[in-house]
Length: 481
Ligand code: NAD
Image (cartoon, rainbow, N blue to C red):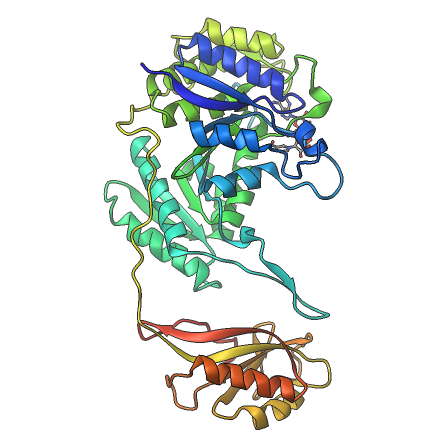
């Protein structure tokens, strides 16, 4: 078999020790790897590179497209950007995959039967990081969910399920509230599910879904989520297996992929041959499957399961009742190497399928351009001079060829006919529409309107066109509208 080039970073803290342990196991297991080493993390940050990664490292990553990364230390103090976010966004790593498995009775857990894979969208949602202060009272963060982004991650989840003999994919959203953004994710999930009739699918509202996941994880299989819910629930899921220290993760994109442990660099444990290399090793197993070395991945994973089952444990999972031998990082690696070729007896052995086209991941369908018309505009204004009625009295005379349809505050209609009890901050949304239902307005009319609003002494801070796509209203009504 030809060797696959990969880029390896040894990281900071316990990183170099767990990476050495991992690579020694991969070598003995017969992984066909051609390793390029790069330096990332603390030393790079402290040399003045605010993202913790040098241009030469990017060259290696672009060449190999596969990155096995040990944890790094982010230096204290401001001005340092997250290396993980930089790598994910630069390389378009849209899927974050985290298997969360219980190893009962060998690792203590309240959930003995748990084998859940969290597939988290990795690029969109509130993580676009587009935020503004809009007024004295209000900060805004934009939540962006796209059709291609949702399609790629949902398709990835179903493809993952099919490849790994999983029976069900569950989607969590909050589309009872966020009908358009989470609504799109849910809708695309259902569309994609139709292409996988062999796999069961279901959807839960994220709040009750999260409660169920924490209480009865054995009822879930693969779970696909938008970014923020996925970030939170992937940590919950890893924690309830008994230890976040045993989970590896994959960050997958169309052109590259990164594999890592989910834990950090544990600086207080560094250099003492104490750290558990399991999470990085399991991350490297995901890598082997991704690059088409499934047999080797199974060999490593089964030897690791056997080691855990035999009670050979590092300090973090050592318990007198079940552990037999407390070992350091190096000795743990040697114990795994000694068990290569063996399979576990109590824990379920794994057998990864060979993929015909390694590294290939789902892409989005071509964009469908829809007929669109603009029927009005929401003008957000900072207003502190009076009530919503006073604001309406100032705006109605300058509405011109628009009708001022309503004013809302924090999404609640406060004019016309607002409730006196409703609390108002200083940011109002003023909805101007064509006087006839569905009538269209031009960009120039909107620009002229803004000129008149500004001329009336009103401080507008943001506008949002109100559109119909495919003759469908493509904005929400405010509560009470
Ligand atoms: P951490 O995950 O490093 O440590 C949390 C706790 O878990 C500590 O008690 C630690 O000793 C223990 N632990 C973690 N990994 C272990 C292992 N393999 N074996 C045994 N014990 C282990 O989290 P932290 O202390 O919040 O962060 C330390 C540093 O790591 C920070 O600089 C942080 O920015 C960085 N970090 C990096 C990554 C990454 O590179 N992906 C992720 C998280 C944190």
